[in-house]
Length: 198
Length: 73
Image 1: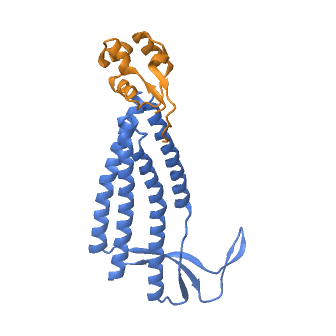
Image 2: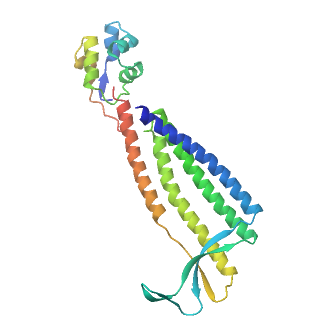
């Protein structure tokens, strides 16, 4: 019984430390975006102007390169780059803080011995929605940056294209958490039944 | 509720308070109050046994059924 009560409290403390660290890191990164040579990394797709480049390998024989995926880094401080960098930092910070605050509140109820409450079911569902929403927001920001870069940058000997990464991992994680939230909601009904059984 | 609890009447007949019954059967006053006011959703056989023992009654003296429509939850 003691060990089951101790773990949520330890996790609660860890989330509180996490909240503090995230807030500090976000402030430091925002400072870096505005006042230092903060580099904006943008995922792009590169296609060489020549049809192909060939390469050879002792193990695999000869091969060709048609296009490549890489990262463009800008260090010059244009207003657009600063704005996009700040948006990314704020998105990461907001999502991380929201997740940690929700997690902390769930752990608080767990420490108090009353985890099966409707508010927790809503919090778990919110986490399930927040994770894919955040994932798509970041992917959207990357894509928006790629589009801006593509329109404004000319590279000799290379054709640059915006790269839309569509990672479904966030969506699957979110769906699993939403399913667990529904199971938890059912648990709250069972808890009410148990509480009102004399 | 279609099931009525007559705890009030039984306590009155036996000149017993809810606090006294609570101490005797080992059930909290809050839970007995829930039972008395019809908020309870279920009653355990052990609780029924304890109440019947202390109140010297039969389960039918404590509970009765009416044909009133049961509210959905």
